[in-house]
Amino acid sequence: MSIASQGGWTIAIVGWLVVFIALTVLVIIFINIPKLINIKLKGKLLKEGKIKNEDEDLNIDADVNAAISTALFLYFNELHDEESNIVTIKDISKKYTPWSSKIFGFNNILPRH
View 1 (tube, rainbow, N blue to C red):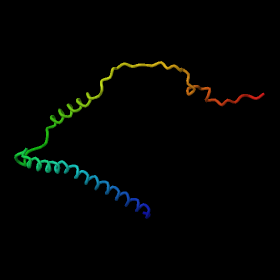
View 2: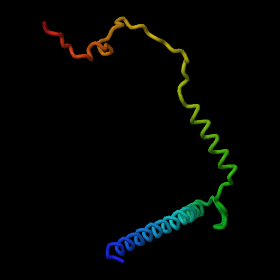
View 3: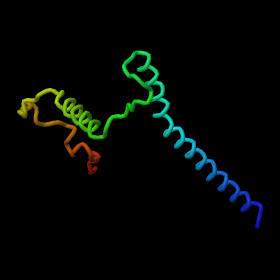
View 4: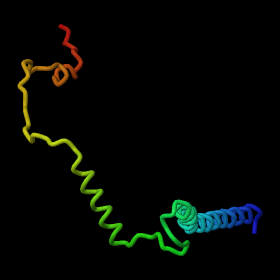
């Protein structure tokens, strides 16, 4: 094998390793973020006296989440202004415009006699 092909394989392997290590770290972070948030939230709720013990589950069921998100979706879609649904076409006084005239696209070269 030549030196160039060995260097190419090294770069490819190192690149793959960097990508897989980065993805593994991201997966670990994304899995542990909700746990860290729940620990902080449970501590805050215990101080305020809203929950009695630390073993209480703070997760909301999927059907409750679906009902809340549907209600919010319907609420925010009804916030737009009500339109009259009447289309008005106004007649313009000047019907000719030089911008749409094709004669100005030609060169004005007149034959010389």
